[in-house]
Amino acid sequence: MKVIQHSVVTLQTALISNRQDLAEIYSKYTEQERCLLEEGFHSRQPGSLFLPITVHSDADWIPAHPEEPQDFESFFRDPYRKTPDASHNTIYIQTIGSFGEVGAQTDQFVEWLREYGQAFFYGLSVTLLPAVTVAETGCSFRVNSNSNNLQILTGDLLRFLEKKKPKDAFCIVGLTMIDLYPSDSWNFVFGEASLSMGMGVFSFARYDDNFYTSTYAGMLKKRLQPKQGDYSVFDGYYTPPISSTLLLRSCKTMTHEIGHMFGIKHCQWLNCAMQGSNHLEESDRRPLDLCPVCLRKLQASISFKIAERYQALLHWVEDDDSQTSCQPVFHLSKPTEAFQTYRLWLRRCLDILKST
Image (cartoon, rainbow, N blue to C red; front, side):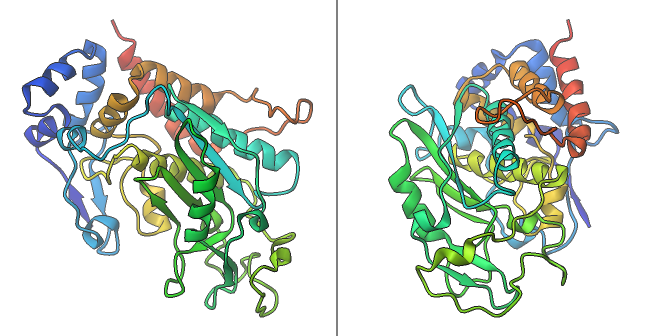
């Protein structure tokens, strides 16, 4: 186990920059905003809002995928990064296949995801596109020879999303509860994206706590060799039960991957939602929100008030009055038990931002 602890000077440079123009932009934050952002300089102190990264093994992302750290300056001057504008200011979510039991549960779950994305990327519109079946995508699929569960091909889904992408989209994200694979030689992939095209597709299938056990309900009961184009194999196909943990993992993955659409690379500064992860255990260790460096990157892209964003996220965690438009009477309680540590963290952030 190794703790990555950067010096205060290194973190100051990563957040503020040595460039005078970027330092001047930083100085325009309010005193309270700067106080919050500079909490990251005190990550070694007990009770700090922002903690250092802990690498548990060589199987973790940072040792397995060496990358150049991206500070705010390198993010800001990246000529290829995408920034929303008046003509491209909507994040679209396209669900593919079943997301649980047909009806209210499915509708409510994807609406919770949409609302969370709306709060996380505060200032942009997040819109759900009408759900599509696997058959409507025309994708290739297979049965995984190791886990004996169905998988769909990511490249085909990206081509489908390209055709579906609305003209005002900043990006479009496909979400599915069905496992994915990028090519015949790969066992699986959590997702795949085309950042230049503002598209990505991601699966929550492996966020089922039982996925890697012999009792996983998504295993096909018999060895099938389905014919391409026969999408009947997906009729009634198993999807993970919607639990608080599944909702938390789904929110975390969705916002991490959309974060990449803004040009935010994997974080190596502090414990952060934008850290890379090689496996579920490492993903679970990531926090739900951004470190100060990545928060500044996102704020520079969207121009939100930091306190308003945190307030919107806190409202999402604490509020259970949301209703889906197609289910005005029947209502499911939002399972936020797994978000309670995050709720307390948001309150601490707001205490700093609202101090006089």
